[in-house]
Amino acid sequence: MDDASRWACLHPDLVRLIGWRVLASDLLDYVRFRAVCPLWRSSTVCPVGRGLVDERFHPRRWVLLPEGRALFPGHSVLHGYVRFFNLSTGLSVRARLPLFEDHRILDSVDGLVLLLQERDGAIRLLHPFTGDIAELPPLTTLVNDFAAKSKLSSVWDLSDFRKISSTSVSVTSDGVITVMIILSMMCRVAFATTSGGSDQQWSVSSWSLSPTWRSVSFQGRLYILQRSRYNSDPQILKIDPPRHNKEILSPPKLIATCPGKIQPPYHLVQCDSDVLAIGCSDKPNSLHLLVYRLADLILEKFTPVENIGGNVLFANIERSLSVSARALPAIVGDTIVKTKPRDIHLGEYHLKGGTWLRTTDESTCGFEPSPGNVIHRIFWCHHNWGKKPPCFQGETTPRLVKRNWRDEVHTPFVPKYNLYFLR
Image (cartoon, rainbow, N blue to C red):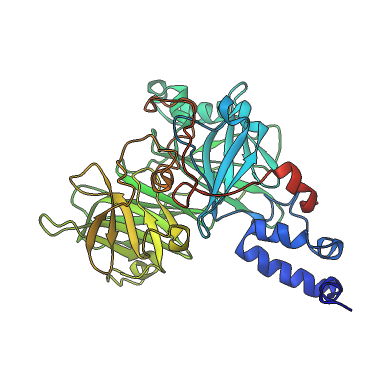
């Protein structure tokens, strides 16, 4: 018996166990694992139909990556293709998603995409690699509930409800999906579930957040960093998803207080299994950045860290990301990429040395990602999801750029072909 036959004759229980371990690393590795032979495919769980209700199949390390040059998802030039970037490996794949032709992106979390159909206001949660879709209440129910709870509802335009700063997705044991969103303009939190029923609607919180806050989604919850008043120490709050049979959102819970020596601008970012708080040093004219682990702050340990697992933190005012240094060979680990104080360029701050360097791409902080600048595209990857944003000006035709690591690591990926192995 040759080696290939021995692998094909593994016990189904062992194949299933190996499959779960592969899935813990990456969903697409699991897809390739199931494609090895019919036995391995029949011995493992198919992601299709379970991509949303089973959190193990959420593609957490994948994010939407802008094409640049005002090529928003759904642009006719892209022919229905959307690009995703793996934060661990740097792999870039293009998936053809015709749904983007009449939908716009509201937000993305854990690799899942929250979509709005512009024609009728339907809101849907999409798994981009399995094609699974969860129907959520329409946008009109969100607007109506906010109007019933706010005296200033007439001030806001319909487009203001499309501006979302953070989204969390959680799934109960019986498969009910709960989605929480933070409405950026209103400083309110809203939630909806897939529990069904004719009266299904979005519910908006009766309380509001501080005007100066930062947020991050982590393990189905929302975490907020804000100041309760001027010159007070920044606080970190946690918002738990409500039970699907509960109609109101509980107020945020205070879980930690940051030391006063951390100054704005603040950032919250998920990094591996931690939540990190980033801020500036309070020393006069200092350019140093401070990073604290939320787990340490909860235990009242106020020592900043210099080791963040060899990752690179992209600290953006809109959304921060953690990327493995393996995905960005030109940037060393334990580095923060953000706009350098008193400068218009993106800089690299090295935590161990406490020094600033210009990014190797000479990136500026402009809103339009350059198609050949992966650092800039990652930094602004949550900015140009909407269609035809006003800050995007210039060409709408992609330029031809040299394909090296700085552009992308390109692997053709067409879900129509790969879904054969998913089934």
